Image 1 (cartoon, rainbow, N blue to C red):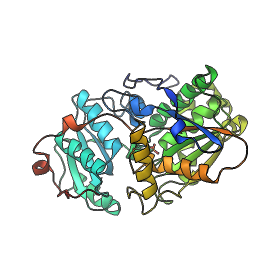
Image 2 (cartoon, rainbow, N blue to C red):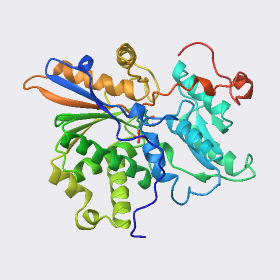
Image 3 (tube, rainbow, N blue to C red):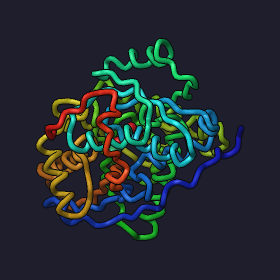
Length: 348
Ligand SMILES: Cc1ncc(COP(=O)(O)O)c(C=O)c1O
């Protein structure tokens, strides 16, 4: 199989890089990578992954897909919307996360789109949803399982490309060489892909991976595993640089350094923090959307770092992985009646 895998044309790329003076600190000039505008259907980071995943086995046929996430999962939402455009069904094992207005809206869209749900109360109970799915609540046609966050080896290819895309934008002078890049992390596919893409292009920078999940869920060991898997897939598909050098060698040769930051997690996955809420407010006032589960915490990390920054001025890039699409038009009037779980009214 030493050929490049197929790819669907779902994302509108390259996404713009813009100056974000409103995020500057005393010693930082900030740019923002507008992946929030990466698709008229559903942008953000997920569409970059799905371009590759949905074009290749085992997901390239007409069968349903089954995957897993929180009630506000951007991954499930992206998957539901893009599978729908292919006339296909999504089955989801979902756990409840704090019901912020954003989470409630995402869940309303999932229900309205007719996604079939196997719900459980907490993340720890996801194995129960899987058991029900394959056992006593088995659907007539089983879906092909897709890992959380679409962080398969092929999914990472989307962000390898994204890293190369940014390198071209630096080369073209659309932004100065970034001393630091901030991006948020969950299932690690975004981070692993971006690391490989930036390293392959020789972009010397410090990558801050701001975790939206607990240490047991995102950590160096998981990142190393994803890096190895994505690198092996690149090699299997015939990328010469992957045959001759390991991922670790790419990273070392490029002078790329990686920091993992769990400081903004607050009360846990999906639990809003004051700093993330403030980041969302600031974004709104400046025409850029964030949310409190992932990107708000990433912006909060950037701002916290700025507060303590000293010394020479640095150029910083914030990668906005949140989709800015207005999804309210998808919400059916009767979504609450169709929902298999009770959704509280009060804003979270
Ligand atoms: C908006 C947003 N940004 C970033 C991420 C993290 O990406 P990954 O799961 O590849 O680490 C997610 C994951 O769901 C997300 O929804």
